[in-house]
Length: 366
Image (cartoon, rainbow, N blue to C red; front, side, top):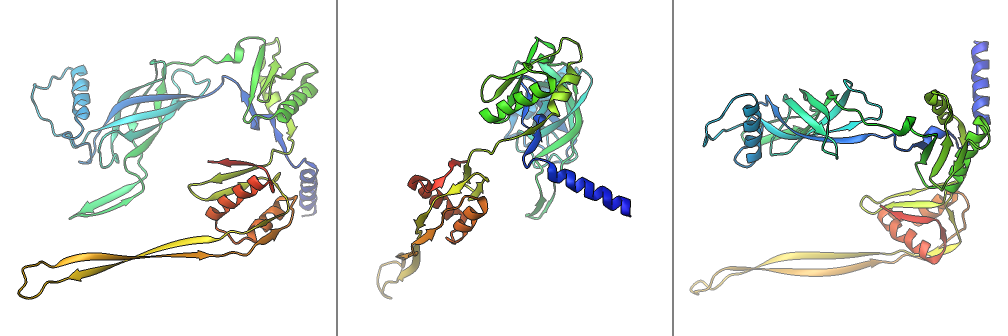
């Protein structure tokens, strides 16, 4: 028990000595040109339990099935009206990872392209997956896994999750490889995930410190060029470079506002200057009361209905509140909480504070 306690204390002391924002190069940069590629295909899902496309509204499903049957040597007589309830037209998408070799398998997503009620229990027929260049890079086929479930009877319907899309793990086989620049040239470029001159300088400095001066140089705020060794061990060299420790500088002050959901995210670099804020809410209420006009008993008129609307405006005043200057994130949060505003109101308040020069941060609305 004593030895275990000593090990725990040593581990905690080691963690305490690490820099607050120490990361590895692989977490902020990646080799340019080494990326995944999007693949797309059109196919048919068969074997559905009466939940496929309604061919009267999706004629392309019938055309696709006729084309597939002709490839199998089956000709459907002209003018035949096929009612296909067990077939659905789908779009298949996949991500071809870098360095994928012929014969390896990748996961695929299958989504209904017509009006099929459910893809549950269906089987995808062999579907070629193409890249943006029109070349076939994979062939997809297999049984779908649909996470949802549903049932309907006598006009009542119950559904859990989504039934019009599914997934086939390892459902596609790679048929063509994509060349990567890993073995080309004497240099490679590392692309940073975010443009920052300090980060680019730190990445180049960490590589030069570990691999020798002049090995890396920052071209701009997002690109670091690395000289590769003359030997064939480029994989080992990049493995060492990716795992080099890196201490990041303090990020730029930024406030991210989501106008659709009312979310507000503030990073640690945001500071607040002294200011006075007043925010009031304006409420408009419309009340509609139906009025019935009925003619006399011996009159020739008709009973009519007229709606009478009453509109009232209520404005809730708010006292002028003084906010102290804050140099830490906790101080900024405390100051904003004193306003008692909702997240949607906070969007307008932060924008007004930025315009007044009291908020030292960049506002980003998403």
